Image (cartoon, rainbow, N blue to C red; front, side, top):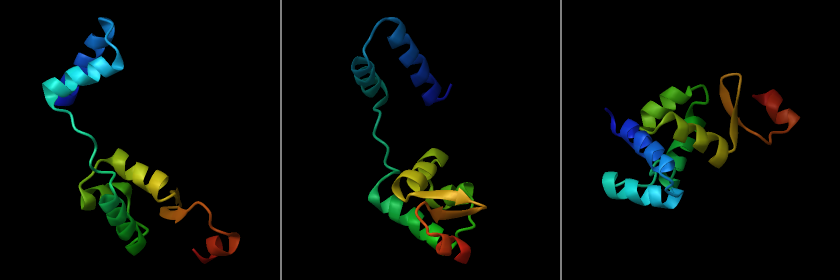
Length: 104
């Protein structure tokens, strides 16, 4: 059984016996040495930004493979940190003017 599945089972168990979220986290941290996500830091955001700026036609999977991060982290960096969205296989800024859209 993989570690994440074990953790999900432990979370369900803690919930059923009435543990709070904080208590559950402390127990999981003690048992599994859970650490915070390291994929959404300034260095990784800059790396994803550079990759996308060099080739806007990359898929999220290709960006994930280049950076070594999860799909969820990559998607969060693109949408939340870089304020980009997918438009016809390209990532573009949300706030482009009509003239800028026509140039793309």
